[in-house]
Length: 275
Image 1 (tube, rainbow, N blue to C red):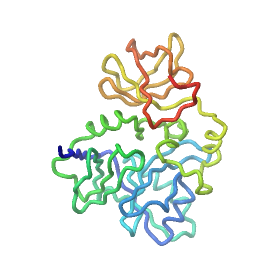
Image 2: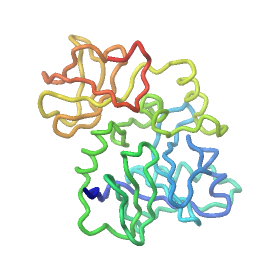
Image 3: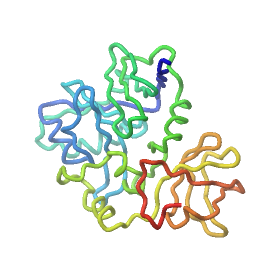
Image 4: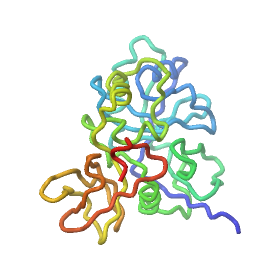
């Protein structure tokens, strides 16, 4: 049977263009992944952190061969440009908001056909599909709800699941989902990111949960009388929750709704935390 490809338009995403001969070297020293691996047809998923190693924004780095194109949360675009611009110094780079030139899409279920679009595989998981930057929203594209259902089924985090200046990358699965390059050298926030990995300091993880009834948009998760996490995103009976690892095998509930963690095969947990 032919493979059915779904393409969803993501209007909440924007695009930052980084141009100039120093664009790769400039970004390489600032973000969590290896920018040199971004090539036509190949994207890199990465994050900008605070100097203390806390999350600021996630983005896919694509390229058309002449510019780096950051597929980023639209609400974060102005702040990202402002923060990155502080580090230009003498680098020959220019940063600008190119959201009006590109419509961001995600595609899954098969290889997308989108003439005129910049297309690259989603580097997090093969099942995640592809990212597309098209000149305009594609005719017949599904909406963001379809993509949310897709990513929640896979347990993939999004900007809405992460807390700027609070979340650690290892809590959010960046280590398992190819969002960190451990060999690239220094970048902002590297020290804490490395320490959380090598010293096993992560006490919470963002994990998919299934519920016995439709979930609210967010809320506190309890195990008995103890608060053990928060629901970050939901759609129907599926959600992503930031949970304490020592509570994964407890009886969890949110507003009286029973929750069950559904640990995906890609997620690495300490043996003592596996439910």
